[in-house]
Length: 298
Image 1 (cartoon, rainbow, N blue to C red):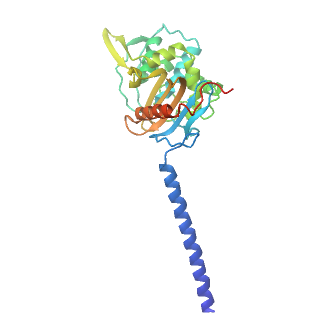
Image 2: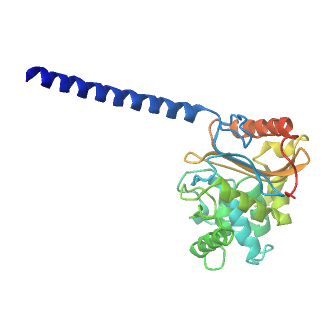
Image 3: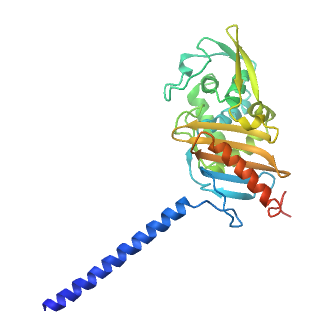
């Protein structure tokens, strides 16, 4: 009887050992897949430091490369593209001067701004600063002074997202400072196309620098995307973003290899990694230009 019990116990130990080994192997494969670079539609590896990425042909809508494109994640100041769309499409008077208020101060992240409470700017100037240099107080002031105030403005942002079919997206403020502003790369491709239809968004988001007057002083601003100052890049729309929860983000509509391409890079680690990823995508497209057909499918 004792021998039979020992055989059963030995058999049970073997089963447990095999199950543990299988679990370890599965875990190892999982880690290997997590560390492995994502692949394009042809199976060729492209290592990007961004956790979420999408490269899409703007003409055909064809996905050329995708990495976690359905993940809904914080998008930081990419949110300001929605802010600009709502302002422009609701016919708010851009020439009207808006006074910066203490309410526009960032109490969530404590980011700095040179736009002092009590200073006044046109909505047009605030739009420029929000899109070009990602000025948070400028975006907050645009939302606060929208007819009905910030709550109505945020509701209009979410309504616009729904109208564009951005089912993975939600917005809670005009600046993008809250991690509650979330979207997916797939949704942002829709947003980029909608924003690109507006000449003002195209111009302001890609302008290299600008100067505005505040209380008798001249304030100089530069574009947060240094690629717009490079002669090697032909960028039709651009927006950067950063908060700790979102990582470094960059979206662009850019001409590469004789085609219009949408690039979405989210949650990139390292201060210059999103720029590095953009350059890696560009080199990858140069290599694969012959593989990937341009234009709309026939």
